[in-house]
Length: 125
Image 1 (cartoon, rainbow, N blue to C red):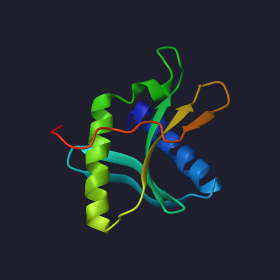
Image 2: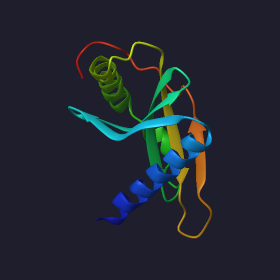
Image 3: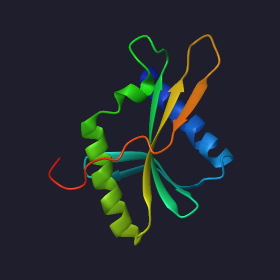
């Protein structure tokens, strides 16, 4: 496995542990629908939370959360709609981003952005 894949997997593991420690119920990891993959699907009370995890080894080229494009947001909205239909979920939904900085010689930094974006629903992707 390429080192960037290892970094991404470790970041997702840290994010999942962080959310579980905050009391969220983890439902799925790496849930896929068509072209979209949702890194983490969780429940925060009765709110469905779709989490995009961005992990980088440095912030040299920008903070990890800055790399969640509008295209990715649309894919996540599409995935959320399909998830809710597939699992019969009919309540609130929230889109979060977890930014993980994993410097090679330093302490990992996990930052959680709750309700980070609200993508446009509808239209093609």
